[in-house]
Length: 488
Image (cartoon, rainbow, N blue to C red; front, top):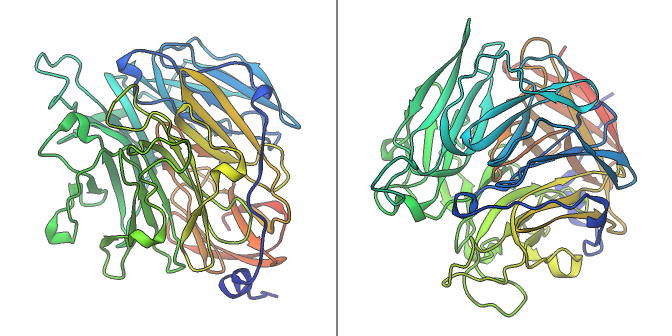
């Protein structure tokens, strides 16, 4: 029997306490993202389960320092894992490239990118048999999707072309798409490139698979803008498609349906305003009204009134009330005098009317370090999303979510046969909530974990899955567990 769920009505009346986090950074071995100007950007973190114990593990980029793997041993304790020595890493994304059940890591580097092939018990090797040709570029963005093949298509965003004698300004490198072939991969340029710091393959407001590229105006200076590339048509969208060019100091991308209409809104972080774009019925985007409370253009505490610099952005239901909240990692590039140097991270809690209110300081996560990457993930399995943050020239931060009186929750793990084992590209719906299952976005790092839903007071729910091949299936589930759904 399928039982209906009235998330909007039921959850709007649910009251929860302000979010509260406990600093557990001492649980991690010391690690920071280091380096000169070639590591001003980057600093991403990959979160995934590398040994099958359902606890999220962490791979953190190191910049000029070695990248490191931290294995979650339970109850907020971590041990250091062994990974091949890698320096000059800017970030990493987890992905099962060969569908062998072991998560691999596509590591972005200032230099040749490196694929770490996963093995049993959190072992990794550089023995890449996928045939992905390395490119000697400064890579800062990544996304992947399956396009009717057993192997994924990979898009890599490249930053400044350091070989250009006229650089670094107006010297953005070409981006690259790695297309699968019977014998490996064929790399083709994606031009023009405007120095992207985030790329996301997802369905846009039209419902079509696209690549969204968020580009750093600091280096393209003029003539560039945010980009949207139609995957099927293999072309950039323009005014004839309803795409309006926007130029900003683009850093990160977060995507989530906030209105319940099945179309994802998009958060773009930048130097200054954090731009939330509302997906319209006509397939276009419009800027959210300033009154929504999501722009977070200046520090909310600390006394520095200069504009903020936003990096990683991620939606997640911190209090499990059925409404997605928003974390934004903030921090000066280095010592840019026009931007805030005391620039705390944001935790924007969504209210029943769809507006956002700042709660990072009361929650205990308003650090003044130069943050870069981050992730909301349940590190202790109690159903509440915890937080990890990477910092430039400052230690990793780890926070345990101890918010009282949170709602019910459900995690949905997808599996299907073939090369796209994790069903990347699927859409999961519970009541009025939907999430796209994607790889990419954020800033220089992402997750490959079951999708987390807050349920409020609901205890029995209906889960609808639209699989990558557009077939659908419906399942019933009881709250407060992880459910594995296999494609019928």
